[in-house]
Image (cartoon, rainbow, N blue to C red; front, side, top):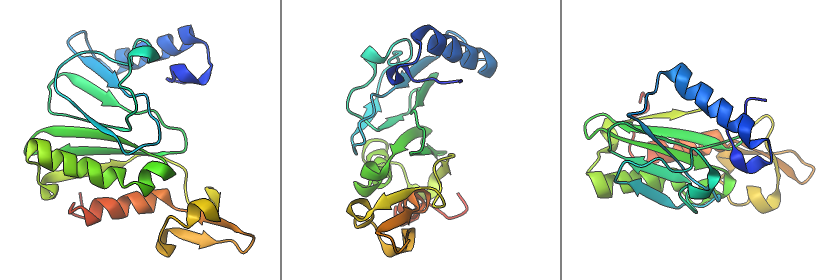
Length: 188
């Protein structure tokens, strides 16, 4: 398995090799810092204001209790780790600000994507009309079965009742809706 997560119980040396292989293949040199978060399914957002590698060489120094990172610093890579959750990447082309968001159902319910955009506006004077977004691969509505305890937190437009007390939830669509409602252009 080609995993990047130190916290999943896999062999730490394998994870380090995988991470080193990634930066080598991407052509990232020593002039870059990498920052990862200790994700907690929250709507906590941290703005990275200085260059320093955190959470890349070990999980212990990752940014704690955070599911979105924002920065305007050059030569810094920010990232989130996901399996089924929704990874959202944001870029403000005018202010040169980037953000990464880890949006599980709890973070999605807590509006983490919308709040990350608000943070970009508040801290960097970003304009949503200047932002681009990518929703990276995640679990689809075909496969994400939840109970009513989770489904009741979401609008009917992003869930399908399966008539057995279960629902199919479309987290990708809900996060897309947050992007549009925050003012991003549909084509971005």
